[in-house]
Length: 108
Length: 108
DNA sequence: TCCATATGCCTAGTGTCGCTAGGGTACAGC
DNA sequence: GCTGTACCCTAGCGACACTAGGCATATGGA
Image (spheres, chains in turn brown, green, purple, cyan):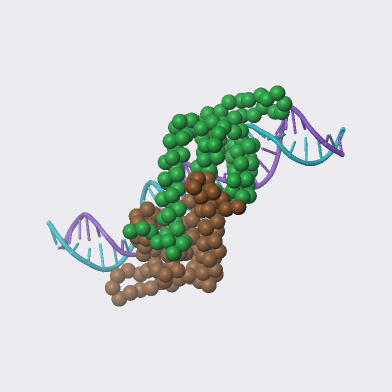
């Protein structure tokens, strides 16, 4: 469970270039060292949400070999949102860390 | 919003000693530098959940001056759970950081 | 040829979680 | 007396991600 940070992780994954849903799932699993093995029922609705929110755009691609794929690309709004969410994550993790990492108290 | 880490923060707060619900709220606000200003409707049900789960124990205290307070104490099970949750948080924040903090990739 | 597996997309329903919005009591200061 | 603060509680709601399904195409082995 990504506890509210699923969208951030998806946006960060697509920052490296467009990808279709299934590839996003594999990339997240790979890049997290297997920690985040997300079911499709989690990722596909999230991609739809992000597209409706204007942070992603999608195109259907029909390759010569293989199945049709829906390829998602980060929009400019998505890039901006990702930047803000990075800052949000930094602040959040620092604040929670102040409780769970006693050697790292909240900076005065 | 604490995104699934509310229980961890409460347990960590009570690690420093018993406290009643209202004091827990204030301590969390103080210790987070105002970042986590939790409504009572969030904290009280969480304390009840944690008590039912056996991680906290509570006693009603009637001081000479002032109102009755329900004071919560970490149980041994709660102390053990907090230790595990610390490790869980470390792993989680490292994994999310691998996406949102590009300078800190997932350790190989 | 047939079947299993992998690829690839999708949705309805559900449980958990934390918040909103309310309710109530007791004490202190104006 | 009235307001503000301390202190406790609950019902209901919305967001989120997961379960559990469905469906279609490509591929490789038996």
